Image (cartoon, rainbow, N blue to C red):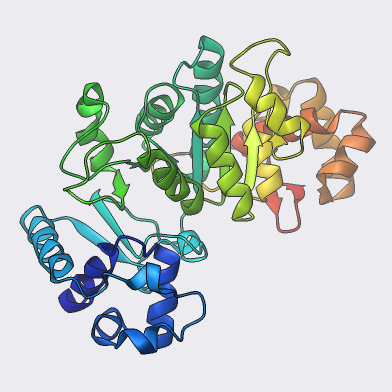
Length: 367
């Protein structure tokens, strides 16, 4: 990564009315951040979608001085930077038009060739939500996904703590610079998260915490991952905003259903009702919809169980696959006379036992 390139991007980020998408457009047309900063205003105004309001203070020398100060903070604190057009930048985020041109990070983050899943929800999570989150991530652990969230109260910190418990990488997306932590009570989790994962933000060290920052933070949560899961939400809230952003990025959204009159399930139920989210009742639902395959983690041993340990429907499914060879979930459910949602859950359990394995095309076969 070139220091001059980073400095140029930081300088552009200080221009008040230039967003990430406009910065990318300018660089596409002119060639580089440095070239944009030295280009004549008359030439920049010829670019479609770039008006005087956006670039009126482009050449303000204060922007360059602010960028230099932030660069010193980055270097002094060993902050890692991901630039939007470089290979190391998170792949999914590259496809978001408003993805940050510079992403700041801390810890030991590795997003290359990883299954990434965002989990969000209410700050007032109930025992039901906590229990679902714990069981859900535990069942996903053999797949070794990266768990992304907002490091906030409630569902966010629950998901990240459970991820740490199962040795999964987890990334907290912050609504402020890396020189502070909010909420302060969560400082005690920082070290363990940074040990296997870390924190992302596109806010500077000079940016103070403000509720209006959540929207910008939420686009990173939604953009990083293949799918976003909402675990409990009222009829309004940041998790619903994150779900809408994920939908705008053409990403899958899942919501955990709740009781009809439970205020903390209203948002999830509405997402499902309006077909803005798939209903999520178990990890098997997500694995099936995303066509994720179970993989053994290095530290895990998944051994095939003896046939005598199979129970009821497991025996039926085992016998069917053993007699008929590989088959898709819907056919398995139909032939074994088991509801599809229940079949998906049973298949996941059998995979974890090492009895069957998934194949491309959402097929399953006996090992």
